[in-house]
Length: 338
Ligand SMILES: Cc1cc2nc3c(=O)[nH]c(=O)nc-3n(C[C@H](O)[C@H](O)[C@H](O)COP(=O)(O)O)c2cc1C
Image (tube, helix red, strand yellow):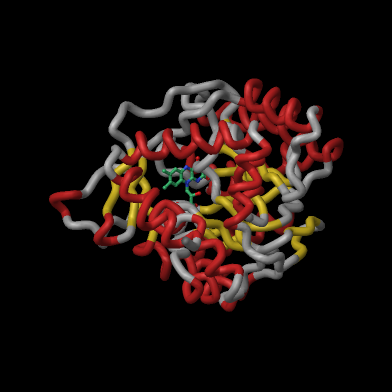
């Protein structure tokens, strides 16, 4: 049985019989166990696509397809993602302080629209615990051969005017352990977070991180929302270029829920198929403004949507919702077509 049928006929029906967050937890728990079990990793490698190496911001990727932030928020299954064949993985979002996130339920499935809405609110173990986990992976020789990024956000309890210090705390701990770092200023589920995309706040954050990065010297990327105006986008790109940002991740989830019937709508960020066009538009707009490397994220579900993102000007791709619906076969399909 190939990867696609195995997932779509056996795994997905079981996972989709659970709540979206329950299914997520089962998947993560199993991949966490597999990560500590060499025989299981070998089994996962059966899904691995043939290599298609590429380079961006000074790193080499065995293929251009990564796991997007939010899937493995705490970095508990890194060896398993590598075994499954991802070209890179992004751990996080991690915040300076551990936090439980919003009350459940907080992930909602829309199979007809091939979408998800989530309002998790950065539930994560916090920077200290994640740093210890990554350090032990490195020290035990289990660090994977693929680039591992760390996505950083602001702790909910930290007031917005202290956001810079909050990011700096996590950056100091985690940047030395990561291959690249992402400043996430675009989740819709932490009140006020997106206002860090505004000019003065962004400049302050980027200036402080650049100063701090003189020691670690890691590529720092910025992850942006798809709900910005073109003027806002232009300003963000200009500020990013001025302050040494190595690349842009376009995009996070959207607040535009027009694809979801009103009666089923939920508060949160929408991901998946309905985000495809908007996020591609953003990739194209960024490429028209700048030569910064772009990681495209949003509605990649098949070879055509992956190719569309690369043709729009991105170098790398990230999967989340498409992987939930289609599983490891999606990675093989895309890797074979790009
Ligand atoms: C359940 C869920 C949790 C997410 N958590 C995060 C997160 O912690 N940090 C982040 O930067 N993006 C997060 N995202 C956004 C994804 O990384 C991705 O950018 C977005 O979903 C668009 O890609 P997709 O359409 O392939 O899902 C999350 C998305 C989902 C569906």
